[in-house]
Image 1 (cartoon, rainbow, N blue to C red):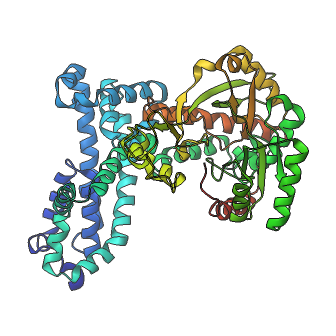
Image 2: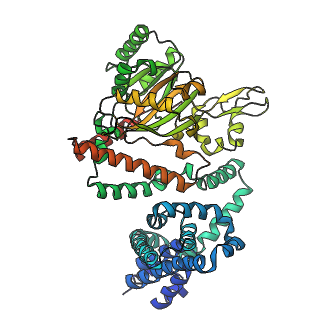
Image 3: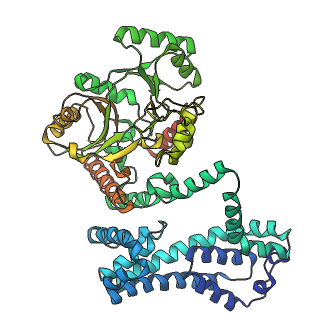
Length: 553
């Protein structure tokens, strides 16, 4: 294959003139050190035209597959005692989690681990320790490595031409720069330690944040969940089946549903347990202000009270209003439909995930989330900004907290003064989640089931509720429901920092199996899934609305 001068120029002379066989050999060996980095390098060589697809695929895919098999062989034939004595014993807790997952779910974890950072080593060791059938292991890992390698090579080749063309301006020096990028990054990082303290602190927190899965961005955390959903869609013969999980809610509660519509049903059937709310009518700001004043007077709602978008996810746009000026500023900030709701003071808040099959007389509580609202405590000397950055957990979402406290960041709270960091009970807004399974009792289950059966067409979802005392919650009394979310809701107890990543995925996979199974049962009873075009319009519409929402409290 002829090489373009513009593309080969930035490659180091020693590499550009290597025969393809030597290049492939180098890549093959490098897969045993950093397999994804080796694949990216092969993709750049593809873009430069110095290596062909067969050689790149064989070098990368073969090296990755052989490495996977090597880990399996070490674990199977050398045994767990060798592992405990080796330098890899620091991965023991991750291997234990992977082994537990294997016992429950078999080969599926091998495929999922291919796309999860840091999951491959403990997963393949666990497969060896559990003496998984060698043929099945090689077949599954081989197919997974093939798909992953082809995708990564194609992506790198697609963008590699532009990268190499840019480096072409540097001629031969650009190629060395490409090879020395890791060293350059390390040098800059080291220099940063001697530079601006704020940047150094942010860099350290960012690194630690990536090591804690509960703070991973959605694009990194959810691919295995999406993959699992696709498997369920094939199994139950319907990608849109979740929209039948709750026939009484638009799209089953997947996207675009009205919070007020479900709250209105709850207020009609379970008023004692629902924080009353009403949709604010009107087109102009003046009309909405007048309507809000009328609702407050008619319902006897006094500050503080809640304003929130009628369509919302992950606590977006929720505001605690303490004075009229705040309400006016909120209503003026965006034009989407807004709900006013009586404030349920709590102080406790929980997320109760419930489900019931259509043919069953009684439902169950799947999980409960205990919500903890973080705060920092003043010492009379330190600013709020520094208190947040020095807090072991608050620093991971410092930007979100400080944006919420805009104008007060440099204030020095008095000794012992508590500064709340978040009021919305949502993990995305900075609330701390813990597993609240200890609150599940027959009394609470019976109460939630009775409330749920009073909502027509509701079978699975999560109640967000506030309560004063834990004993009352366990007894199924003394709480107020502030929201009911449908099929897209999560059993948010997974975000308990004490959970492993595998535990979290296991809960989500079980949850989505319930969603699909209930959707299939409702389809058999005559429910028709929401049309794809309607779902697309709802998703696009919500995206446009959410972009206008103000920061949540």
